[in-house]
Length: 185
Image 1: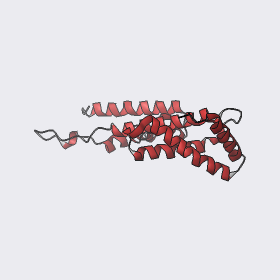
Image 2: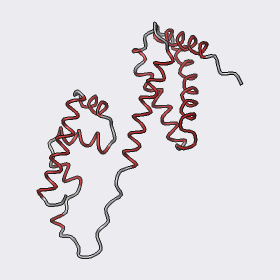
Image 3: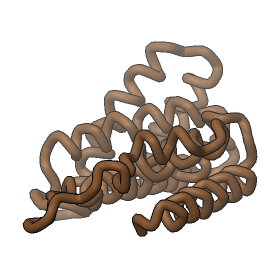
Image 4: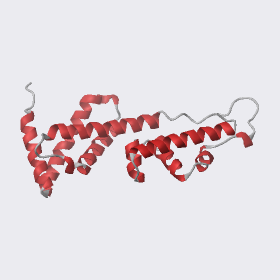
């Protein structure tokens, strides 16, 4: 079976995006519909049946949204295909990281068999978060609990990624200190 002619795709996609950027809504809708199939095929080739179909569909939709959001960054003097797949790869990596963070959250702790703990010596997550300063709390919740990347969390809070990294580090350090002070670490 002959490989598809990528140059035809490249020409069609470049022309479609150029028309879309010039305001042609019909060309944009046609391009995005075609790219949906291309992105799905690309992801199926990389992940196959290993991933749930819901995850695959989420990846396709998120990748298309990412392409839509950054469409203004495509330079018509440069090839479309590498730009598109770079955007798709980065979005899929973000989604995989987020899903791994959620999947790796520890199971709820069970009470130990034996003497009951003194309730005054227990701390719950909400109390620990409430003890943090609002900026630190937001940074910790966005990155560690909700699974946003540093860049995504920084954009949500309107700070630089470096500032977000500092906030997260500070929040983790303060939470650990609080646990040590309560002798719960």
